[in-house]
Image (cartoon, rainbow, N blue to C red; front, side, top):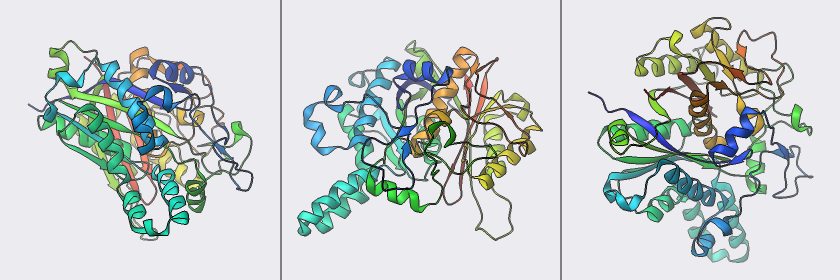
Length: 404
């Protein structure tokens, strides 16, 4: 019998909330938290909006000894991990150190760390090699900080597959639990709102250049012209169902299915791989399309990518065959942190029986999907599909179910 992997703790640091309760209260009410960048002066850049995490003061939440060796992304990840462990009712000191692992994802967050190292280079050229070595190992350090802080010596790693990475990390955590690891800290926090990171994101050609927050990030809208970046994400505590029940833990839900594909080279004439990833996730979950109560869309806000996603959803579920939501319109796309935050929102939606809204979007007639609009929708939600796509062709899909 295959071991079920369940989620018992949520740690969230997002533009619309610190902690699961604050986040969910904002999401269910459609609170948009996109605004003009404050972490640096964006006036000389064509894109000036982002979803920043307000009120996060690392000095108040972490030991002072950790601050010099970490950046904003790592600090948020460490705090979110603390919150997730507390939410799960887990004290790492009570568990076997080799029975606990950490599997997270990274995408663009290393830019801020790298920028700091480059600034050192400008003043100390002799540090050239060490700076670039440090940047290359950034993501491993980020995961390692969580491991070291909590005495976790079990299977650990970092998945890098751009914005699909958060789901890939959760899937890898599930594999480790099935192999016998007691508990895995998974998910992702990302942060790259700094000048160097901003230039790199602009080079991708997918950022919205509008300056009105409510009209900047509009997936599946006829006026879509790119996304707004954000920072933050979610850290999840994952355990085997048997272990969680044995200790009387509250279970948010089960990670029951996963599928991943990679798109063919542009111009090859081959179909995009997203629908196949969705089918693989359903098969892995032992589910049929009719079992899915809700889909969290990737929501690229790039017309061609929106078309591919809408067509894949319609082909699998039928025209307007399943409710679709994209609450990331309230926060911006959080890179590797976006999909774990969607998984957390999916689990909270299951718990309340409420589908969160998609803020600001006026669904284009081109897409035959049942996009939940600016108001939340009450519904029985038991099984949810979460979609994430990464730049370059990554497609990842996860299916989560409510606890029995």
